[in-house]
Image: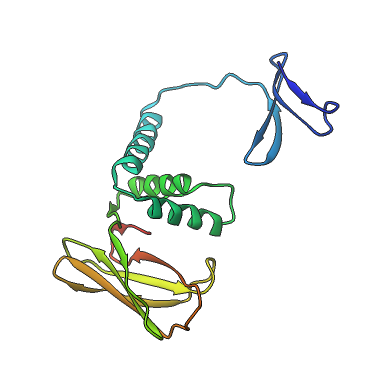
Length: 184
């Protein structure tokens, strides 16, 4: 049964209408589509794709993300200017890395040091050394400055320089290692 808000086809509606149309609101976007019963072919390729999604969703819950990590993923989703959540972005990147058979390394346990007049260090707890770059800037959509990580025993440190006091900076870390996929 469709729930109408003002006259039909005007302000909005939600639900199905006589198994012919489905009215919905998805992330603030009003949508009407034909009612269909989806096919479920269960091919080997489809089962493999479902396995990728199952793995990605499971790892979202077990990768050890803190509340701050989830906020960072949500901020990345906003920066992409698509109707996505941080969870959606993570699953997209994770599934793409599984399809491309890349090694996924999770970036967790990130510590932002105390800023000085023009520098700030960012440290990640890492068991082994690998090539990665920290990109930073004053806009969440334009991070053009970059710095390579320096590995020391169990940590990778990035020294951001040329900062301005009382300015908010955004950053993300991305692997530059061949055959790997990761991002904060």
